Every structure is written in C-alpha cells, then in structure tokens.
Image (cartoon, rainbow over all chains, first blue to last red):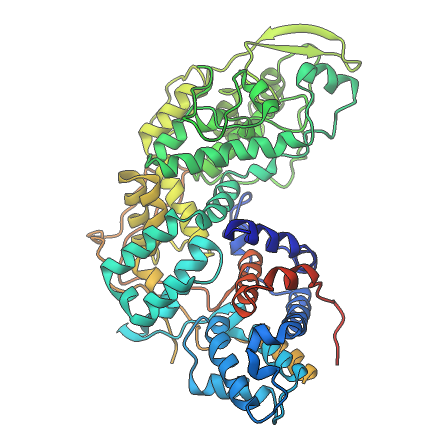
Length: 511
Length: 103
C-alpha cells in the first residue's frame, strides 16, 4: 500500500476518534455578522479535555500492543537489565516528535520518570506515551523564541518555525525533511526557508488546507441540503430534469475547490481564479446544470458556455435549497466575503423574512417590493448594497442553471407565466462608481479591475493564517504586504506570502 | 498514574505559559506610511475598515495556539506512524478511544 493509500486508510480508521472530539466552530472575526473560519475557534471545552485524554490513554494502550516494533528487541528479550536503556531510547525517539522540538534534559527526565522504577512493564510504557501525547507541547503550538529581535519580540527558533509552517500549510506536524532542516539550522537561512515554503505549498498535503480556506472564505457550506424539498410539487416542477441528488451539493463545492487547485498549480493569479470560466466539475449531474460535458479531472479543462463569468457564476455560489433564488444572500456573500464590505446586520426591530416565490412576479420584483420601500429602515442597505449585487445574477436560477426568463408556478407546481429576468444593476463596487452593469459578468470584470477581490483575499487569508481578526493599526504592515502579494503575484505567491511576514516568524514573550 | 495524566490534561487546558500580552510588531521591510492614512477607498457604511502600516504599532496576538481538530488528528496519526510504522494502520483501525476515564 502506498503512502497516500495508507494515509487514507488511517484517516478512515480515525472515524471513532473524530466522533468524540468536538468540532471546531466556524468563528466569525471581530464584529462580522457572517462568515469566519474554524481556525479562529480557540476555545477549549470540557469535551475537548475528556476526548484528548481518552485518546492519549487509548493511544498508549494500543501502541504497547506492538511492543517489539515500538521499542525493539530490548522490550521482548525477557531480561529487565536493559529496561532503562530501552525506555531511554523510546523517549529519545518519540519525545521530539511529540513536542515537535529537541528534548531538553528536563523533558527527557520527566518522560522517563513517568514510567517509574525498573523493571518497565507495558503499562508503564503506555503511561509514558499517554503523557507525551497529553502534554502541552503536543496539544498546543508552544513557542519560546530563540533570540530577542526587538524589545519583547523574539524570533522563533528553527523547530518552532518548522511547526508554524507545517501546521499552516499542511494542518499537521513537520515531516522528516522539515525537521532535518530545523535540526541543522538551515531553516533559519533565507534561501533554505524559501525552498521549504515552496516545497510545502507544492506538496499535495497543502490541498486540504487550501480547500478549507476557500470553502470557508467563500462560505460554501451556507448552501443547505439540495434535496430537502425534492418530492414537493412546486420544487419538482422547478427542478424538472435536474432534480438534485445527495451528491450535487458536494459536487458544487468540488467544482470551486478544483478550480482553486488548478489555478494554483498553473501559476494563475487571483484575478484569473475570479474570472476563470472553465469546466472543473467531474459530476455528470452538475455538468448537466452547466450544459457542458463533465471534466475528466486530468486533461485541460474546457470553457463553460459563455453565460458563465467565472467564480461568482459557479453553481455553488448561486444555488440554494429552494426553488427561489435569494438575491439578498447572494449580494451579501459578494459584499462581505468577496469584497470584505462590512454590512451591518438588520435593525433589531426588523422581522427578517425570506421572500417567497410568487406565481406572478419575478424574484427581483418580490425582493424589491419587500426591501426597497422608501422610508423604511431596510431600503438603505438593500437598495444600495445588497440587492443590486444579487440581482445581477438573476439570469441563473436556484440550481445555478442559466435562464433568460423566470418560469413561475403555483403551489401545485403548475406553470403560470415565464417573465424575463432583469440583471441590470448599479453594483457600486467602489463608492464613486454608480455605473449600471448589465449582469454579473460585467460586475465580475469590474471587481477584478478594482483589485478589491485581491485585497479582500489578503484580509481573509490573514485571519485564516493568524487565527484571529486583524488589528487595523498593529497588523497594517502585514495586511499591506499580503495585499501587495495578492495583487502583484500568482495565487501561489499570495498563499505563500504569510510565511515571509515578520509576524509569522516572531513571538512576543513576556519574561 | 492515570489520575496524574488526567490532572495533567486539565492543567494543559488552563495553561497559558509565558506567551501573554500585546505584541509589538517588529521592524518590517514594508515601507511605512508617512502618517497613518487609509489605504483603501472609503465607502461610508460598508467598505472594509482601512488599515494603516505603522511598524511601531502593537497588535494583539493569540497567547497560545490550540491545535485545530484536523491538526490534532493529523498529529496523532503522524505520531502513530512514527511509533509503529508497519503496524500503524492496525492500531488506528482498532483504536476507539473511550469517553470514560480509567483510574
């Protein structure tokens, strides 16, 4: 079995542990009312303590079930004379992996003492392994720094830097090569460091982290189940031949994630990713919605029909779980996640209602009537910011299918009338821009020209990298550097950029 | 010993180590603004709050980073594979951690 298959098997076998560990909640940064990243969840619950404890105990027991492989022949040779040396060797081998650092004499003595007096039995070894994997150095990224570079600010040592890199790009501990670079000190040299950053980001192990970032940045999981209304007359009439299956939702996500990975690998820019209208779905079901052949996942992806205008017209960013489009939520996603606009929540006195499908008016007409009445507290945000951006994609229905007319139905699913859709909108990408755009294609182009997609990416990626909201003064230089990288370079460069920030390589220590 | 491990696990979750307090941004290669100015266009009401590049400004930093769930599980997996390379799969397959605590 190869390494990839072995990893997959391990992850599958981890299912029982996954079920016991609390999930990290997608946590909104600062005052944001939507979005966020699970990395920002730094809370520790009682269930976290109990689960990690149980895992450590079980880990010790399971590993000592393979004592010969774990410790060598010294553990099974029937003599206790070499027990101490045998235990020392185990601690020296696994201790640095557990702590992601060279063992200090104190660390070493602590782990050895855990086993108690010789002879060392398997239960004692299990205790040592449990303590190792329940230690702060295992559960947290402990950083003590190596050298004070300015008052109170310490440069990370090579092992700490290796851990930051590995957890940022791979969501896991450093591999042997990275540890070797740390051990030799090479990682602290600019050229070797740059080479390691490039290696980590090029490695397939970087893909899950990229997927997590893109998925949470673009709020793909806000798309509910696409099958919840299947079987109801109205929805079935709406869906027609494209009645969704359980796999369609993930296929929509996969389409976006594959687009990101492909653009990363081919050295494309962020704006290329934004405007990329090629076919990345391997799902026949989603391909039918796109009215294009499914991609084989290997050959050069082909262009989607011209109505598609890049990322914002991929089904995952258009669809919802009903027969009705949701222009307000589409507009909010673009404003808040793609442009980083700060949209205030509705006034507390307002009862938020989801516009229902009408049998005689388009969704645009219904939403405008509901939210753009002059003199209401809704009209300001909705008429200026939210609705126009959402209306610009009304030439796609709630499954992401292109349309020129909106077919309306009564509650029994009987068609009533097909009305032409209106996608014209003053999208206001910038404050001084009150031009009318014909549709989301034009809006997307204008977003790319404005560079606001790049700047927003930089801000969102900062949050993901440092696991906290930005501080507008203290983090300003970091944000600017990420912004510059996002605007000037490739998606690869933009993703690598945090690793070169001084704030990535240093720590403030209160000593 | 089990009780000791439990205590250690509880202590770990409460431990903040030495890493506390606001962090001063070290000198950076980015050219600072001559004076703090918005670097993004202002659109009252909705545009992103503007940031300023002031190298001397301090920012808050997480005092301690907890491994995310995925990171923790990947770390456990890597530890097992390093501990018993050829038996790792068997260990991971049979391993079903218990919620209950043994004493």
